[in-house]
Image (cartoon, rainbow, N blue to C red; front, top):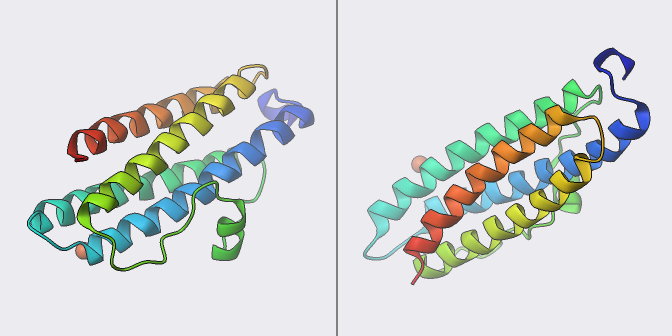
Length: 155
Ligand SMILES: [Fe+2]
């Protein structure tokens, strides 16, 4: 991609990282929707609404990661099977998770995402792709805020 000043080697280093985040954010998004639909208990109303806010934010993240991949000149692969294969997060197959477990699971996934992003930022900082580096730093900060909120709710 000479046009934006990155060589092929740099792009090939950054793309798989972005693809992993796109896949994992899709798995996380469906997990949050599962929890939004299936949450029960005394905090139903509060958690139901909170999960909706979370999956709306996550949907924005998905779109931004997908479009960042396009900016680097690659097509964005988008199928459920591909996302599941690439994701570093596990999908939720259970519909009977307790509200407390939901919060804990989302916190664990969010912390894993932050740690993967921190590693990726370190790798990308070695290239000239400051655009992707800055993009991932901002995305990591969003996840850090979610981690703080989830941790504050966890019992
Ligand atoms: Fe809904």
